[in-house]
Length: 232
Image: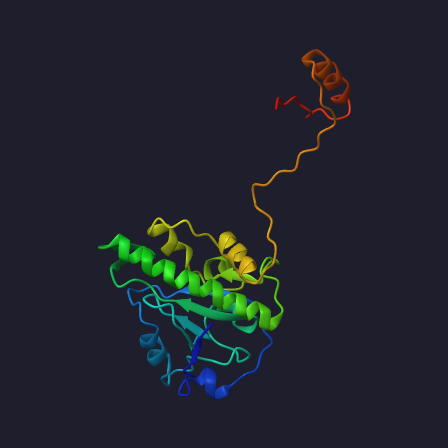
């Protein structure tokens, strides 16, 4: 995929250039009604006073799916808070212009169709980007703690208290989940991911006579109480 490098040379994260070895990837959502990745690229590329060094590694445009890289992947960013900055690459997905935040993670939407299209565009690019990064750093996208959202990072005790990006997906009635995102990333790199609802059945007999089937079932249930008859 095409990734545009637009490093934030005026940001302390870039200037300090503290190297780190990524252990995983953290997915964010910007939390405001701005679909343009360029706007955030310009915003992060400033000197931030009082020791603040806020900068993510990449931003995804919600209109076009463009990915802008703001920091080298192996330079420590400041995106998740807590210890996640020392372990995870942080990527922000931009959000639709037609939403309006009212309180916290709650928002209204004036054009649900456009908003969902923007969300889908950003999501698909995020899947592609995370697949590329998993290949580069040899991450298993299905392994515990490798791909997490900001919300999941907080629940794991490694990030600040945020609800993104799940709050956006829920608010727009999108079918996306982080488990689904991880499976989509795995599929994008050609890694088999088990279907969460798949079951495997063991058949121990087949009978033309129902009477014989029930007689055998009673024998089997002595060792396997959950055994049952299914007619094909």
